[in-house]
Image 1 (tube, rainbow, N blue to C red):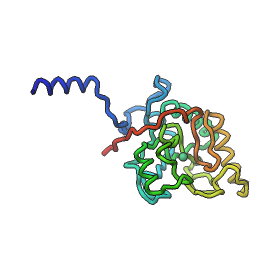
Image 2 (tube, rainbow, N blue to C red):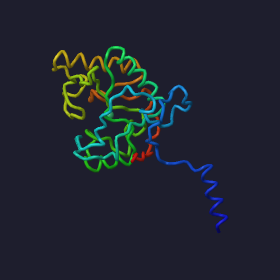
Image 3 (cartoon, rainbow, N blue to C red):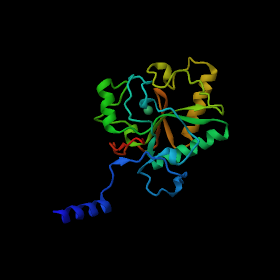
Image 4 (tube, rainbow, N blue to C red):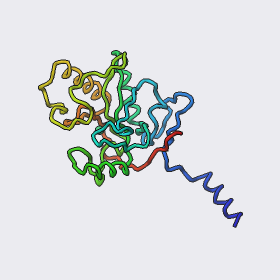
Amino acid sequence: MKKSLLFLLLFCLASCKSTYLDSKKSAHLLDIAQEKDDNVFVNLKNYSNDFVYDMKYATTDNFLNKQVYPCAECFLKVKTVKSLLEANKAFLNKGYRIKLYDCYRPRDIQKKMWKIVPNANYVANPKKGSIHNKGGAVDISLVDSLGTELNMGTKFDFFGIEAGHNYQNLSEEVLANRKFLKETMLQHNFKSFDSEWWHYNLINSSADEVSNLKWRCEN
Ligand SMILES: [Zn+2]
């Protein structure tokens, strides 16, 4: 009995993969170019110190008024991180940087959100899933060199026509800010989403599978 348990343990050490994503920060910044598999999930904070994080679903400051993420982490597929780092470089060259509101979202959390608000205008039906569930979508805004958020006309997750790219009844400043964000993201392999100025999908990520990998929070 003891022998078989030991065998199982040794076998597991060699081949059992953790089903959790590692949220522990690496001691040094890693180089995304060294990541050979574009489709694995990685933690953005391990590849750059140049992003601002405001992960709304890890707080109660969101349209659900509920914290649905156990803690604030931004996991994405390697290919998404590659493009996002390039986009952020372009913003940094002009004195701005990306602020993140949401990244990868496990399917179980999509289900949880759907349970709270079962309305496809606000939450993607978990049966089909969202690109957020595939690690190919980000919800973002921009901050200037002082960390002040640019005026985008509405708050993140404002569900009204004013949040859409086609809505023009906004100040010149807001229109210019949205244009700056959109044009730069489009130049770096992302697609915009008509009804939400903050949402960007990596091109060709819709065919990827919905994932339910979760992350453990660091204590
Ligand atoms: Zn989104």
